[in-house]
Length: 144
Image 1 (spheres, rainbow, N blue to C red):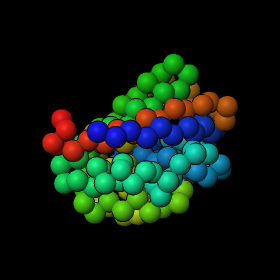
Image 2 (cartoon, one colour):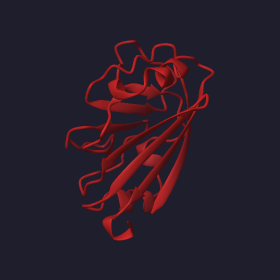
Image 3 (cartoon, rainbow, N blue to C red):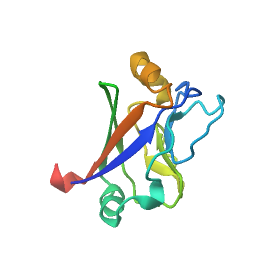
């Protein structure tokens, strides 16, 4: 099992309405149409994750857990890893309910997308001063 901690911030344009993905980005600004984004100004993108995290998350039976905290509210998203995960994007991490992978993909077959997040959590992350702590955990089937 390996963990990564990311610190990010909220933004007034976060709507969290996307039905199949969620995204964490290093970009400080987003438009309202970016309805999958749930955190901005992150201190890590996909390429910044440790080699160890990437190795475990790329295991065929990897489980990936994303824990998010903002202003005392916690959310958890659980998904799967895959050998095709590349973790090469400089700014973004995307969780997907589908099995699609690209250089931005953090996890596939996620149990939640942005639209499934509790609306109280979403209210808390709609402010630029909202600090969002994100803990990523990856473990392979052998370490369960």
